[in-house]
Image (cartoon, rainbow, N blue to C red; front, side, top):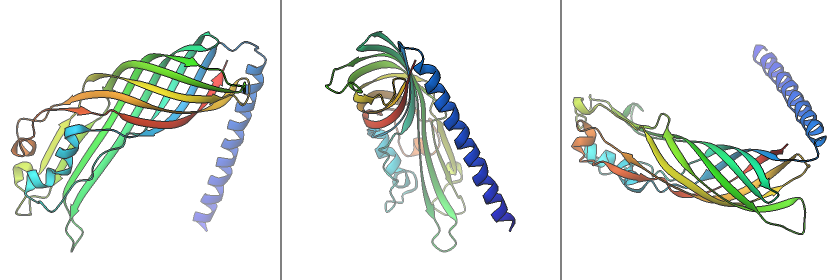
Length: 258
């Protein structure tokens, strides 16, 4: 009975929040519609894409073999890199916008080798890639017979910063193939690196002050991964390497004009 009551209360609260967001959104549209000229644009977008990960992918998938001589086990290949964007732009001309792009990327991958009898974790490998990206850019719009649809081509270049990227390995030393000195290994991935995006897409202005967008593009970026000079990674002969996170991506967003 208590669980049911909590569920009903949660549903009512969600309905109230949805109603509030709807009212605020409609009020925003009414206010902004009163302004005839729209010089600025705000985009909130989500995207999902591929990433190369170059040599790191081989290191990650083969760590059970290189580090613990367990040739029959493979880590999961890392090939994805989703994220979100906030883009603020200024129309310098009716068909040209200059903008500032802030992006956040996050991907986490966990591989675990368990004891098949008691389900106890023997080795756990966790890779987290978390970046912030900031960049100026320029976008060119093209005319279509339909006024509300605006295809575009854009390019930006800027700086990535690691925000909690790391690769951790924990292993249970009670098993004979796990050395005590290799039971905990971590490499914190820090620093800045450069990159950029080239993308095409289309905006659909449902209202004069709001709409949606679809886009796809290619991201180019490479960072340096430096391994510790002792412990498991050193024993596995892992050398410092360039990690290429370039790849294609696509997504959609909500646009506001004011």
